[in-house]
Amino acid sequence: MQYCRQCVYPGAAVNTLFDDDGVCSACRTAEEVAELATADFWDDRRSRFEQLVEQYRGRNDAEYDCIVPVSGGKDSYWQTYLVKEIYGMKPLLVTYHGNNYLAEGQGNLDRMRDVLGVDHVVFGPSVDTLRKLNRLGFELMGDMNWHGHAGIKIVPVRTAVQFNIPLLVWGEITWTVAGMFSADDYVEYNKRTVMEHDLRGYGWKDMVERAELREQDLTWLRFPADKDLARVGVRGVYVGNYFRWDPNEHARLMHDKYQFEFARQPFERTYRTMSNLDDMHENGLHDYMKFIKFGYGRASDHASKDVRDGYLSREQAIEMVRKYDHVKPRRDLERWLDYVGMTEQQFDATADTFRNPRVWWIEDGSWWKENVWGEPSSFGPVHLQDAEQLNKYERADKRVA
Image: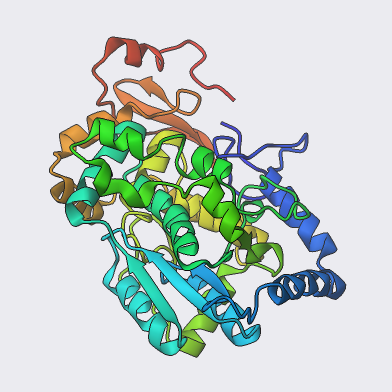
């Protein structure tokens, strides 16, 4: 498996490409932005955002100027601070609540309404529905947090139609993550990318057909009709297109201004303590499944971003990957297994079916892969039983670039 020569991103990272020098598209996009990022560059982008805001601020026919979809995290605080305090808009905050908040994350969410002086709608499906979606998402696509990706992208849009609020202000854009787009694309929210990327091509009907759920249980998962989106003029923009996106700076500023709280207990799978407090499994079991699938995890994500932003050297990033990426998060695993009613043996056997044969191979009853620090190594026993599945990993060309 190929790794970027500047950061620690692997070739298995979604939407990541490598050039002839072995540098990933995310690093090249970051360089593109850095080369352009003079004062005039950001002044021009800020001006574009101001022009956009002027179209929606203070409209006589709307109670709110925009919707800000929030999880209660550091970036949610910063987005809300930006549109309300800097640009004088009246936002309605909308949260999808997936029932897996850390105590610190729940506290941050509850505090937003008070410290930022905003109205806030929080929607959460029933816990029984969420348990079923957690288990089904894991069994179907190896992603117990599928419901969360779907909820935060659909519930705010449904709310926009219900309240007749055309503008939604999202946060980060994907060119800052994997280099999927150019900085000049100004990508906006659209149903196609939500279906293909966030929802992996699945919808509410797939969930009803495969679990003991009724259509009425998943009304929140249905996109509004196109005619209703057009009637309201729904538009979703990303402030990451207009302002330099720095999660470390967001966290520091929001802590200083609004007492945003970091995780009190270190995570088992990454060194950052200010990210993903809205779902304990994002940095835990959900991220472990990314390692199982693609051979890298959130520590690689965080370290690669921090290399591009100048917070870490590549050597320091490699040490973070070596320390965290492979860890099976025990306390997180035990909580989730009890939550959905599954044994660890069932979990491991199902998890192995999602391993990418371009990344993993079997040797002496263990899973092996290439590593960013050079030599390959093994990462746990094989739980697969099906002969046809096993054969995928027993090829002569075990190590595929």
